Amino acid sequence: MSPDLTTTYLGLSLRSPLMVSSCPLTGDLDTLAEIEQAGAAAVVLPSLFEEQLVRDELHLDQVLEQGAYAFGESLTYFPDMPDYGVGPDAYLDLVSSAKARLSIPVIASLNADSTGGWVRYAELLQKAGADAVELNVYLIAADTGKTASQVEDEYLQLVGDVRAALDIPMAVKLSPYFSSLANMAVRIDAAGADGLVMFNRFYQPDLDLDTLEVVPSIELSQPWELRLPLRWIAVLYGRVTASLAASSGVSDAEGVAKVLLAGADVAMMASAMLLHGVRYLPLVEANLVRWMEANDYESVTQLKGSVSYQGAANPAAFERTNYMRTLASYE
Ligand SMILES: Cc1cc2nc3c(=O)[nH]c(=O)nc-3n(C[C@H](O)[C@H](O)[C@H](O)COP(=O)(O)O)c2cc1C
Image (cartoon, rainbow, N blue to C red; front, side, top):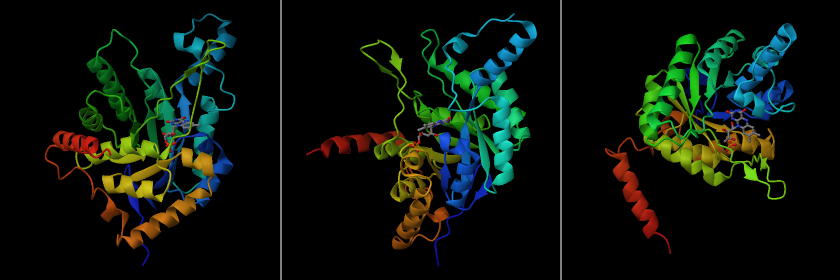
């Protein structure tokens, strides 16, 4: 009998642990239908950016009030994004059309930078029919006057505020750059997150030496990037009530098996889909099934967390031993 691939994520029952994460592919209805056809268990739509919302509203204000407004600082930096993401109305349409067309869960993603924005738009996404909301908290702590605990408190405040406003499940896409990531994850869990997506990928801009301009650079992930979520999923498995999703470097069935063994409920892919196309998904699933059969795993449930740190009384000491062993292994 074929292994049972079913899993649960954010309380949603899924046919398998394979999801497509937030990326341009999930912003197009026909591609979403292809993704479902290819066997994805759920999808996360591209993020709706608060700046897009604010800019659209300012535009409306401008029309109504003939320019009697002041720009927020971020808006002056904010580029036109004709090819990526959409304005609020089109985004809400995308959510409701995706819901009408697909039978798999559709998770909307919100990237906002002020508490008011998060709450308001999360509510709209819920109203549009999203099965869940993923908060893409893209926060670069570059304010030299702000302490780590101030940054963390802001983060937790907005998680709690959005949670209070929503009836549907909410996932938080985490940054790996917290001083005490495990503690922060536990606090985000306690603030009401139903899922932790590990991790948000922080794109690092480059500098053009001819023009001295900052050039945006987005590179697809490499398979070795899986090791960061792999470690932290293994650390957090059994220590939070929230579901765990791996995002970053999941590129094949082996990667999926690894994150499940570490304790993930689902494995999300963006780069692999962009690189190989949606038709790569059935191959990943078939290889996962083959790997499970070859290793006598009957279900994803049986796989989940079987190589986590749950048995380690002190994960920090475990990590330190591993560090020493890794250095000693160099030949
Ligand atoms: C072109 C591109 C666009 C992306 N857009 C978003 C986005 O709008 N919101 C978001 O939360 N993540 C976005 N991501 C990040 C992915 O969802 C994912 O977290 C990241 O690429 C790591 O996973 P991967 O190794 O499978 O690519 C984007 C990634 C790529 C490559």
